[in-house]
Amino acid sequence: MRTNLQARPRSEMQFLQRLLSGGDIVPDSIPSTDSEWQAVADAILDHRLIGVAYRALLSLPENSVPETILQRLQAAFYESSLSNYRLARNLVLLASILEKEGIPVLAMKGPVVAMAVYGDLALRHYTDLDVLVHLRDLTRAMDAMIRAGYRAEPESSPKTPGDLKKLYHVTFRASDGSHFVDLHWQLIDQLWSSYSPDVELLWDRAQFVKLPHGRVSTMCFEDLFLVLCFHGTKHRWDCLKWLVDIAEMLRGAHAWDWSRINQMIATRPGAGAAAGLAVLLARDLFGQPIPAGAAGILPLTGRVAAMAERISREILAGGAPVGAAVSVFCGWPWATLLGLESRFTARMRYFWGMEFVRDPFRWTRMVLHVGDEDRAFITLPKWLDFLYTYIRIVRLLAKYIVRGVNTLWLMAWRIPFRRNYSLPNHVQQNTPPVR
Image (cartoon, rainbow, N blue to C red; front, side, top):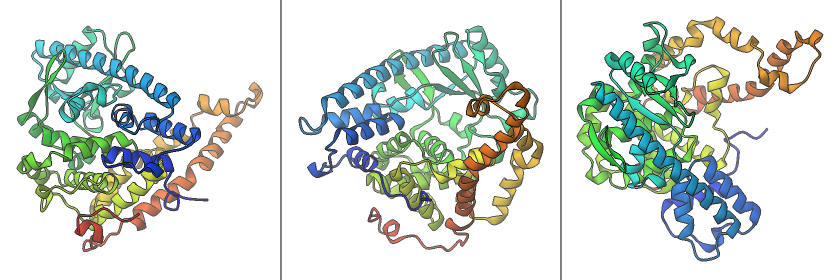
């Protein structure tokens, strides 16, 4: 079986890489068949790149893109733009509702990234909203949202004081079902907090961003960068949109206040490792030079460089990253964060702190719980209903055991434990790797 390490880059991903790097497109590299263009369009939509990619395609020589592909992407672009403006309006209304209750709120991701990074809501696709409140204001904020017509999703709501450490947001559904809002009081649960920016510093350095329907409070640009780096790393950068955001932000990095980033990662070293990984990925995939201000601040170590090289290959191969399997195989999606940790004792501390280790019966309940997907796999008469439990076990083993082995191999061998592991030459010389 071919693994992601052996998979060849997919042509549509390589074309998107060149298209979004901002350089000249060689005519021979432009897709020539309908099937190739369909694959490009599918990748654009799958990676939520409709705004920037559609704009870039319009800059290609005339008749380069088939009319049917342009029409498909144009329709998706108009639909995304309309949704983006509606969500931006809802964000302003929600912030107004909370602020009228005396609850400070910071807008995260979504519309504020679109305006802060691109200056245009239409150029960045998003489907939900994220806002941050102080923990002390959480109960009042939840009550205010419920009065405004939002409904909390039961599985995401904290039920005991201990849940406030294990959870970090509550998901609300709008009254008309049009969108969701994640109400955060932290960026991640307490166990992994060293990889995320300190929310107290986010509040201290908050700024305003103007949206078409009003202004909202958000984090400063440097903190926004760190939050996006953490978010992408947590999900192993499986959506190319996130890396395009980082590459676009880094184009103006010469004007950043790097002392803010230095101050943040002094107490949150994992956040610095996530940012270093993002900088190397933006450089390897989109040719974005490592900012001069990052020298001596971001930990561009051999471990981080090895991780970046692997993820770059995974992205271009167009397949699900090996590390993503951990979210199903072991019940946690943090393989990439754990891979950035160089200290063995710290890795073990994270491992033993995970919920599936502290509550082994949770794993048993998940494996034995028969769901709709199992019943859809094969239809059995009611008197054979008990067989669904065994069918589920076999189906899960067949689906995830190979991915689990690949993930454990990644954690144990691919990312070296040696602290003095040397940086690859292309990182030392600040040049993209040769592919």
